[in-house]
Length: 423
Image (cartoon, rainbow, N blue to C red; front, top):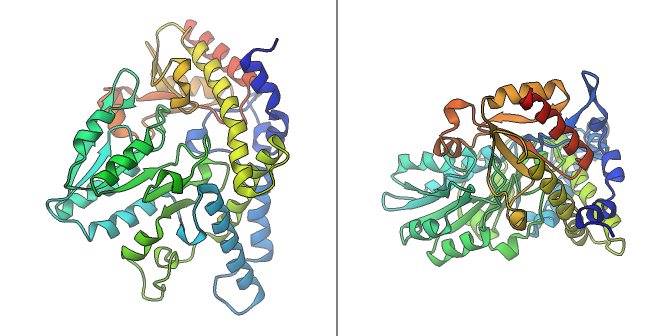
């Protein structure tokens, strides 16, 4: 009888998945490249490369013109907006494109800041990427106060009781991550949204790290805003903001006069990266096709995306269990975040470790020489590395799995890391 792990692996078409990504065939120093750097940016399927190239070859024009390529650009952007609306579960006019999540969040914070005063508070967390802290910290110049939610240091989870205490009648916004980009913790965002709304505050979710690993439904979450970056889920380097229509209309962003006041146009100033927007539709369609293969009766894109994540999540969980089980056998290794397999539904397949006697940079460098791509440092989760007192000593070694990785890659990685540590 097959184990649960084997059964998950055999029902997930990893051969088809890997065939979509040309980068996965690279060789480094005679070793097959192993991309465990997904949290910093994933590889892209061939169709994304083709979509970007084809746009530049066939439709490269600015928007709003009375000629074929301009109209083609308008249609392409509308198509990409519809694709992201399916991805997040909202309407197309609630989707805003921008250079990246950080830029979009700063733009939103400036618009929200116009309505804040000295008695107003914003609740953020010590677990978050700094792009979900600094834009809100900037509003202290307007007199707003930041309140930080503590973490449980033993497993790097949010202290939800502390969040409940920090949210008061003075709170105007609660900003938290869907999942930690540093240690992989998946937060209880539904409870966060409930607590925010109960206090009359808005809820902002940074879903950048969660997006490649799980399905999202902004209507079900009832969040006011959600941001993600398409390059973290197999697409080009772009950021996406979802905002409830009422807020996108009510809040007034900085913009040029030529921008109309219609949404989402009033939130998108300057010429956008059209070729990358073309790639967004392709990356969403890749995930939808994965879902259609996993559940053949599915045809609609939104349903196909859900089917894709129903296939991705158990597969990634099996890889995470394999990785964590092997890491815990390495002498001197400390694992941050949740380590109990029974609780792995509360974590993404992102693992942060430190090993006694070795700096994270040393480990990442030696692994890189063997073709294993990992990250060292703080990954902009500066509050977390400072809180855990690892910032001055190099942060963590981060191993980030996604669904194009394999059990064989995990085993080779564990062998290489173990050999290096044991000398």
